[in-house]
Length: 236
Length: 236
Image (cartoon, chains in turn blue, green):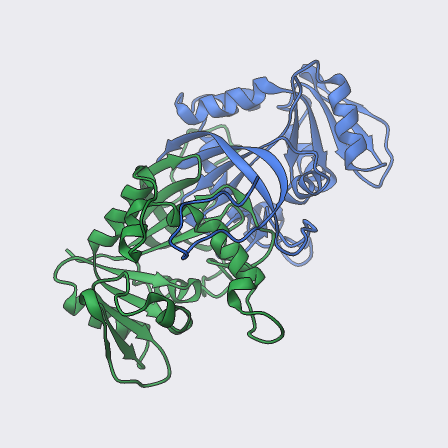
């Protein structure tokens, strides 16, 4: 059955990149502080053989991290992507992008679909994230719809209640500032939270992978802590 | 050898409590949104037998989480604590607080030391966090100096380069808003980060415990990602 999944490499303090590069001033994105943070938290990916193969690069490590990457690629039947991520990737991904599956780009700017080699296509969706997820689901062939990023798109999918599974790759570094996966735009109510269930943990010195099933919104009820009574569940 | 350690229960989005309770308006802290978040991320502690024993409560689970709590208590020879945490705990901790060791409270308000039962004392330190850590180290008897919290004190200790070990108890919930352990006051330079080494991971469905050794500040150097070359280390 198709699940809607997302995965993101984040620092211990929750950033998936450095502070947003505004495109102004000197230098390009590759030299920016945003990129420096992004490359630090994704360094484990760039070393993984399964990722390097998809990029057409030699070498890399055939280890647990590479298996995590390989599993993500093989589980995805279609992708949903934010416009900013697409803009940044369109040129570097080249004629044979690493997705090898249909990609639906959430954007305000209509554009004709783009067919690339290796099975990747880009379709531009202008009527919102739910529509993009539905279109991806329709062509995923029973495999997963992977929300490729960036962080704000992942938040939109969570906020809309559409995400089934979130995998965080927690990298042992504190960036201090940057782009956060979780920011204050989830529209949770007072004393309301989103409950998750961890379903898989894989640890490597370079990165700790935790996969969560998203259970959904639930009230934060006060437990009996301090009363001396037995433990109770705050979520029914 | 004495290490300076800190541990904190945090949500997947990095909050150790809900939004700060301002003490104004209706209700008390226990009924606040700050408390609701705090109790959610510390629920695993309140269920742990080792914690309940220290509080004089019966019951609880004798499981891996309880062992994590027991190890923390037994490793600590002295504590450093923020003033706000002390203010909140002074009454509920009662005559026999759970620390059973000297506690140094970082505050601007001088006060005579307070002796409690079971080996706990509170000493008020008005000349800063580094002094509090030194005073705690002097009486820790070779055991660890544990930074008990709250989050802003932990950040001060990290910022001062005094923290050797950070243990995060990552609870599978998204709070969306609240008090963050990591906020923008670490004074990191541009393209500078704090590198950590994970040394221990213990997973339970209620909480994932990751212990990090703090390596210190390091520049974020661009690696050779995308060049097709072999993996390189960006930190020397």
